[in-house]
Amino acid sequence: MSPHTFHTLPSLRRAVRGICEAHRLPSQNGARLLLSVSRMATAALDAGGPVRLEAVERTAPGGETLLAVTLHAGPTAAAPSPADLPLPGQSTPEGTVAWHLPLSEGEGPPLSAVLPAHRGTASAPARTREGAAAEAYEAEIAALESDLAVALSRVDTLSTELHRLKDELAETNSGVLALYVQLEERDEQLRRAHGQILRELEDALRPPPITVSGLELAVHYAPADTDAPTGGDFYDWLLLPDGTVHITVVDALGHGVRSTRSALNVAHAVRTLALEGHPLESIVARTHDILVPFDPEIMATVLLARIHPETGALSLANGSHPPALVVRADGSADYLEVRGRGIGFPLPGSESVLEDALHEGDLLMLYTDGLTESRRDPIEGEARLVKAAQAHVRRPVREIPGAVAEDMHTVILHPDDTLALAVRRAESPQVRRPVAGQP
Image (cartoon, rainbow, N blue to C red):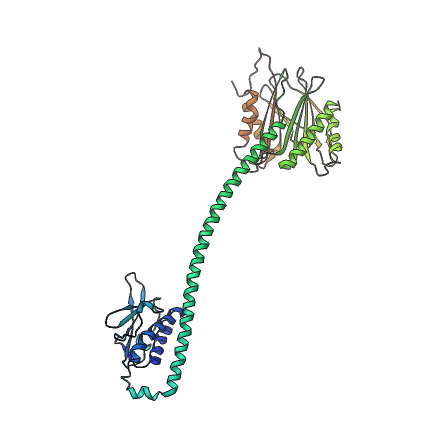
């Protein structure tokens, strides 16, 4: 459309404000456009010449819709540089300045409804008749524009400061993230070192297999968490003065150092009572009586075994612990059940002592529930333990506990500390009984 001509600054400002409102320009962009058009037009209007304003919509190469506002004021010496305006524009030697502002698609009415209709050229006497009221109005508008310019300058300063702060924050966040990663790596190193130290300390407390003629012994222990290897699964074995081998298996409630201390206390109390000659059937209850006054919160299951190496005579006492498994030399297997309640339980003690015997080639498996309850079903776990023990019964004893544990833990739904002990009565060199299902 053709440009509209203006002879007064107020009418020009009204037109610019109408354009801004009709096209919903952001307040900051509209204010900058108003100030910029007014400053460029003031010099031409003060010189007595008219100015022309044109507003058209254009599509940028990228498809963005732009509002192009063009002011035709002619070259004037007093006009400011377009680059120094609140909204910098593009100028030509003929005194034309253009501004391009982005618009959303579909916004704005027809431009003929925005710009006032052409009213022709007003005479100089018409401007004079505006009188003192018009001059006062112009002065007020000039003051408002000055305040607006100051406000926009402040906005620019704050925007610059905001961008600087965002950059600093991004840099700080990057540094914090790097530090966090370093701390995580350091924490992981400390956890591993801590776990290694605890493992070495606990291994130092666990007695190695004793050497007894006629018996072969081995043990496997695995913590639920390799970075925190301490737990309540513990064992002890010793040779009593009468030549009998005594074995203690303990599972103290919980995990960590406290449960390890509880398990050690139980094992040491049982060892002391065994060496003092107390009957096997009384040791669980007496251990409870000794420890509970000093540690009222202690809870532990216990399995005690006595084996005579020469005769194979086997005695078992139990305090709430999983039963021992015996795999005979012919491949048959049985669980040796003994009723009883553990340390810290009501009415603690073994209700009886089970008497049995290990024949040459028989394998006795003692363990904690971490071996059979990894899939949360102890009955299913005990059935799998029978098959695993039968599959490995002819291996060297030192390999059996680890091999059985590996078979049992192909699927782990409930991680827990695991302890497995194997005791096999040695066969005579001339005898090697076949095992069911094996050549």
